[in-house]
Image (cartoon, rainbow, N blue to C red; front, side, top):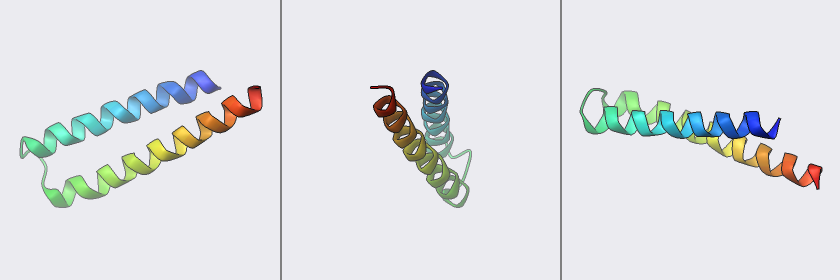
Length: 59
């Protein structure tokens, strides 16, 4: 389960990077970028917390 969450975190990081590239390239507007970026950050926070919790439970 931990490895699946870690893969999901890597994918979320990649998604965030692509959103930043799209925004800096002016391919998406600030109005399009902001809510998507906010969602990705929330997902990353949840994944990080879940990974930490799972790792503590394994110990």
